[in-house]
Length: 124
Image 1 (cartoon, helix red, strand yellow):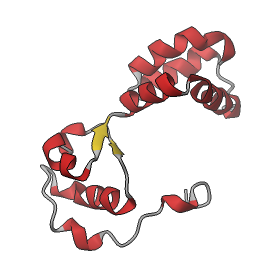
Image 2 (cartoon, helix red, strand yellow; image 1 turned 45 degrees about the horizontal axis):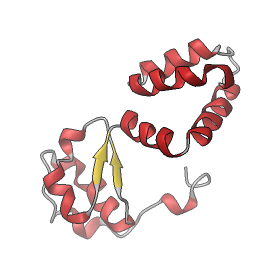
Image 3 (cartoon, helix red, strand yellow; image 1 turned 45 degrees about the vertical axis):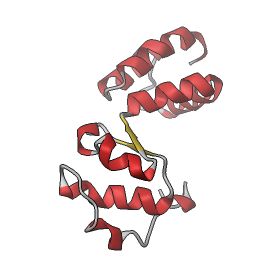
Image 4 (cartoon, helix red, strand yellow; image 1 turned 30 degrees about the horizontal axis):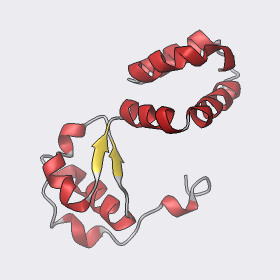
């Protein structure tokens, strides 16, 4: 991860952890890192762990991965489709058909993404 996105590592957030209140205290470090790193979005399948009333004062929202990809598909569909095309091309053992690839995405809890990608099936 550090090699692929060297600016993604957030440090210096530890002092904020104890000041934050979330339903699951085990997620406070994620919230503190988001604040320190200037993130606008926390991506999690557990959106209930990051309630809007806790995040809003910091202008941070929590989205499920499927919702975030939907936003990307609205603003930059060709970039999303190209990235997924490249990802599918790297799956070589065994190779995946478009339908098999979409099924993998569905298994990853991305049903709306899969539904939307069906209109791009010919280029995936």
